[in-house]
Image 1 (tube, rainbow, N blue to C red):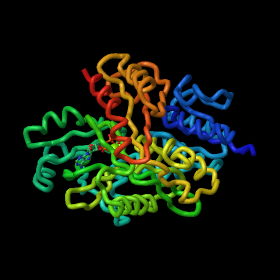
Image 2: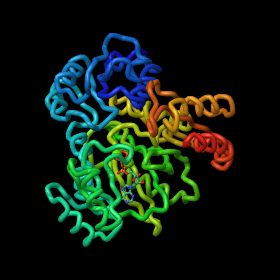
Image 3: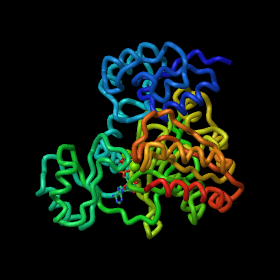
Image 4: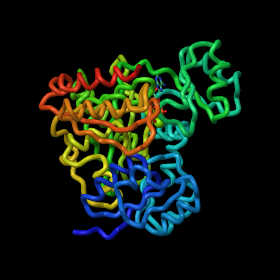
Length: 383
Ligand code: ATP
Ligand code: MG
Ligand code: MG
């Protein structure tokens, strides 16, 4: 069976690349809008790609003309052009959803309206230092100052510990549209990949995410020392959050598990997500298969999203030297049975996501034992 429909993707990074891996298996053509030789384009040889920026309205329009369904692998896109082309081409998820989610404050106001539990936030646009002071009075310290837009890997966040931090906070983020969030004193971070289809909302299993310097380092599925009931509550909360948005596709939902066992949403990504990479090896269909199926109305059943075997995912990040990530990949190739994914990104720099690896075992305990030498090796690269 060859599906004749063409999918367009805004962005050609690693998420687009893994989406193409899934599409290739179903013989579905994916046209990528990004710079030449971007990771996604490297594994997809046809003349349907477009060279340019996914922030360029004219290029988005050009892509739309060549496709049946347009989707995204990044939320920092031009939603106005997507709104304009939505009459001629299907845009999934909806441009309205993308517009709301790409502004983290608007995203949170939207979720609040739908009764979804999340950290309290205060708008700070146009308020300057006086605003920072008011937040301190209302939330106490520390609190988290966040850029509403263009944030990733913690770039856009600043921890305000006291009034003495105001100058540094303004210096770090002052030029950006800001809001503040009450500090979430979490015991663990969890994530759930949710799939929104034409028929309803499904979810993959709950994952524990471990961040280092605000960048995801490891994921554990199932989460360590978390009861099945709590994992189920996380899936239910994530599904409730995504039911509040229009459109189809995979959504990554990040959550805080607080010390009193309650759950709060941290943020939502309207696309496949780093914390869902484990699904490639550990679930019958991956988050990328699911995204493609959802936007093309190919049926998905909940049993296809189950965990076949416990899994740990380790990100391969740029570190102290330009070849640190290559050394990690080499070490893993030679010393483990992990599945290794390298993204073809070219130059490495500290913290840049260059690849990841996933290891599965019959129990999470065995997976933890098996991955330990790889984690140790990664830690040695920090320099
Ligand atoms: P991503 O790469 O996931 O998009 P981001 O730049 O959008 O990251 P956030 O997810 O908002 O950033 O925050 C990054 C990390 O900072 C979180 O995973 C969490 O560890 C911490 N953090 C964020 N908000 C809070 C909060 N309100 N209280 C405590 N810690 C927080
Ligand atoms: Mg984010
Ligand atoms: Mg985040």
